[in-house]
Each structure stands twice: as structure tokens, then as C-alpha cells.
Length: 555
Length: 81
Ligand SMILES: Cc1cc2nc3c(=O)[nH]c(=O)nc-3n(C[C@H](O)[C@H](O)[C@H](O)COP(=O)(O)OP(=O)(O)OC[C@H]3O[C@@H](n4cnc5c(N)ncnc54)[C@H](O)[C@@H]3O)c2cc1C
Image (cartoon, rainbow over all chains, first blue to last red; front, side):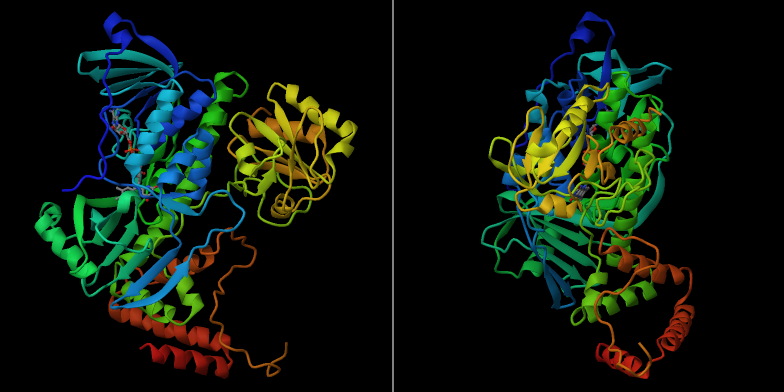
């Protein structure tokens, strides 16, 4: 098979404490250097938390696995410092074609909503994402230990003790907090005797990475019941380096080992592409999938993230995308708890907020799966009726579900929100993931709202026409910056301007005010993970402080 | 609008919603409906499902009432049959 990518082999170094035979204590230990564990490690470092990251392997994901990285994950990756590389290497696509039997029934153009920094999604092989994350971990001084397999977990009231196996034998490590990012089979979950509940789909998919020799459009093609693969579905997607990902639904009664053989795979692809197109196989795998989650993502001092906590079917690309959002939700809370500024129960809201998000992801990917692989004659009949109507009618096109774009959850039920007391239109409700918009930066350059938000602490957007006229309100805004849990005021000004002691963002196209339904004097309190906490028509420092206290369970 | 004032054309653009419910994603109400529909058929055999469908059509047709709309819907459905 062809190779467009050379898998790095990261060096194993014997841990100092194994040599010295002393167990060391760390504030945070993370198990699993997949995309989610690495995102957590980078975020910890950005918060100044020393972190040990353990992985039993010494390379990146084998085969493409995750291909679609959605807008919200890209925004978080921007904050972590790898967004630019991922987007530069990734492939953008807009046109999707849907085929039923021989014919194309419709196509859509996913033109990105204008005036957001990041598009709806990009395609990139998971190994590239992981490689960039590894490099960023190293740059930030993550204590990354390859060939370190966790073999036992001991939970105490004030710490977690791990036994780790390396090529040199075993050693122990102590952690104040353990982040379990050890994937769908999560040994940590098993060692702790915890359950993960949900639905197993009785279906198999063959996935192949194929290198095309000739030009082929960068589009997403989805076939329902095509002549070259009757009764099943097929998906074709472009990735970086002219590598194409093809997913064939196989059904349950197939032999995965048999199906993986090139002599079986190549004729399938030939039938699909037409004989004249030249291609080479790079990687083939067969997978089954499940939609399930743990009851709780926090168990004392152990916090489960990513596939260890929840799994979805790949339709809708919600696996890695949602795992990265888990860490975005978790790390700022962990930092406040480690610093003694918030009670431990703040971490329970990591669980409740991300359980709600996982349920939404499971719901959406289950619905896509049920549409793509109907389980009864009637379900198939309705599916085919929708596809037939879709050729002519917009309402039916909207019902065709070959995977819904991965989008972040609105945390509208979160106990951390402060409910609206003033009238606002639009969707930036308490709990909403923030909308982006272009802004003029204090240095005169052009930038993006979301790049100015989040990471370190809470922020308050203050909307005004002319920043210079804030007068003594500016003093009151600035007082928030010296609170125990500080709030940085960010002035969003209709006219370009500057004031002493606060950053002013110029609302270049008036889109910030529009998307947030803001008027003179409106304020928005924002979490470090770019979610809206509360908003008012008029600034009141007491209310802001009460909302911050509520948002960190300090009431 | 009173009856007969305007012939109601058959709605062919996405039209699902639920009173009092706020949707943040355009695909959600349609997907909610589709899931309800498939769930209603759970554990029925093909004959029972056909019977459910027939009754469902009658219930919805009566609710719509307007024969012009129903005529148009029947014609469109027959095209693809
Ligand atoms: C076919 C397919 C297509 C997909 N498509 C998409 C997509 O388009 N978009 C998307 O977002 N997601 C997609 N996914 C899902 C995505 O690949 C996963 O959700 C993602 O890899 C989860 O990341 P993770 O870090 O939680 O776990 P993993 O990537 O599984 O990483 C877990 C890590 O833990 C390590 N580990 C395990 N046990 C131990 C131990 N005892 N000690 C030390 N280390 C240990 C492993 O070596 C591994 O590195 C797809 C998955 C598949 C299979």
C-alpha cells in the first residue's frame, strides 16, 4: 500500500521517579494522548498547571479515523495554538451531493456563514491533528511520557494513585486530579468498575483511505442504495494530500477480515469510481459503533473526557469534536478548584453540562444512523420516500439525514447561568456558545471577537457608541479586574477608539452588536470557554459579581 | 383568514415546529418529527405498519380539510410512487 504519511515514533525516556524509586505527586495527571487528552494537557499548561500526560503507545492515530473537524473545535484549537496549522493543512469543502440509486437527487452548498473566522468544518486525517497537538504539548512543556501504560488505579479521598508499566518495569505516581482520556475502551473506567450504557448498532462499515492519481472534485458524495453497492450506503470525502476517505456500509452478516482484503476492497472502489480512475489503497479498516455514555463524567477525583466518557456513531463527526469541547469546559473549572477559588462541586457541573451535550450528540448521531441504516421495512420505506420527494421539494431535502453538522450544545439548563431579567432578541441566551464576528483590535489591526475571548478568566463585553465617553463607568468596570476571580472588561465600540486601562474592540461591521442584540450600555458576562453566563441592558457591578459567584458555584 | 378567502397552496418548504419550543438548529424540528414517526412504528409488523400509515393519512387529511391542498398532495405523492 501507498504511504502519503510517515508515522512519527516518539522517544521513550525512563521517568526519573522510576529510576529514583520515589512516587511523586502532581496536581494533574492525564491518561491518554489522543486528541482529547492532548487538548486537556495543552489547556492545563496555558493555565500554568504542571501536567503529566501518559500514553501506552508511541505514535499518533493509525489510519485517518476522525476526518471532519467542526467550527467549534477549530475555535478551541485556535485558543490552544494549533488551529492555524489544522486549517492550513485541512481541506475545505462546500458542495455535498446526495445520490439515491443511480441518480443525484440533490446537492447543497454549505457556504460558510460570512464574517466568522472559521468555516463550518474542514477535513483532515486524525494523525495530522494529533501530530500538531504533540508538537504543541512539547512546546508548552507538557511532561509527555510515551510507552507508559496505566495498569492500576487506587482512589483515595485526597488523591489518586496510579501504577504504570513501562519497558523498564512498573512505578507509581500520585495525582490530585486524574483526567481519564484513555479512549472508548477506557481501561481506567474498567479498573474503577464503572459502566457505560447505550446502544450498540448491529452494522459494520468498511473504511478505506485511497490516494487518487487524477483530479477529483473536493465534494462530499453520499449514496443511498447505489447500484455498485446495493441496499447499503457509501460516503466519499476528501482529506489532505489527495487522500480520499470512502466508507462502505457492509451490514452485520459480513466477515470483517475477509472484507478488509485488497482483492475484496479494490473491486468495490472500482465499481464506484468507474474503471478508468487510477487510485491506490493506503489504509483499510472495518468498524462497528455504539452510541453510549457514562452516567456521570466525574467520579471523585477522576474526570472522564472524550471517548472514555461517551461514544457516538461517526455520522455527524461528533467524536473528537465533542471530546475537545469536554476539555474546554473542564480545564478552567479545574484551575479555579486547584487555586482554591471555587469549591469542588464546580466540577460536578463539568459532568452535568457535558452529559447534556453528550446526550444531544448521541441523539443526533443516532438519528442519522437510523436514517442511513433503516432497521425495518417501514423505516426503509419512509427513508426512500423522503429521498424520492427530495428531488423536487425543499421540505424533504431538509429531512434527508446523512449526518448533521457537529455543532456545540446550548447549555441553557446549566445551573451556572444567570437567567435574563431584561429583554433580548437573538440566540445569544445565557448558556449559548458565543457567535464570532470581525472586530478592529486595539493595535489597529483586524481580528476576530472569539480570538479575544476566553482561556484565562471571565470577561465582560460592554457595548457603547464611543468608548471615550464611558467616564466614571470605566472606573467601576476596571474595579472588577482586581476581584479574587477577576473579570476583564472589553469595550465593544461602534466607533474606533481607546481608553486607559481597558481594551477597546471596534465593532467594524456592527455585527457584534447585531449578533448579540446589543444597544448602548448592554453588557455580556462571558465564561473562559466562550459561553454566555448572563447579560443585562445596564451595567451593575453587584449583579455581575453575583453572576460570577453563581458561575463558579461560590454562592 | 376565513375559509375560501385564499386557496391555501400545499406547503413544500420546511414547516415543522412546536409551540413554546425554541430551536437553535434548523434541522432539529424536522428530525424530531421523523424520529416520532419511526418510533410510532416500533415493533409493528409490515401489515400493522401499513394500517397505522393509512389511519395517519386519514387523521391528517381531515385536519387539513382543504380538498385543494389534499388534491395537490395526492398528485405529488403519486408522481413518485
Ligand atoms: C471511522 C471513524 C471515523 C471518525 N470520524 C470522526 C470525525 O469525522 N470527527 C470526529 O470528531 N471524530 C471522528 N471519529 C471519532 C474520533 O476518532 C474519536 O472520537 C477520538 O479519537 C477520541 O479521542 P480520545 O482522545 O478521547 O480517544 P483516543 O483517540 O482513542 O485516545 C486514547 C488514547 O489513550 C491511550 N491509552 C489507552 N489505554 C491506556 C492506558 N491504560 N495507559 C495509557 N494510555 C492509554 C491510547 O494509546 C490512546 O492514545 C471517528 C472515529 C472512527 C473510528
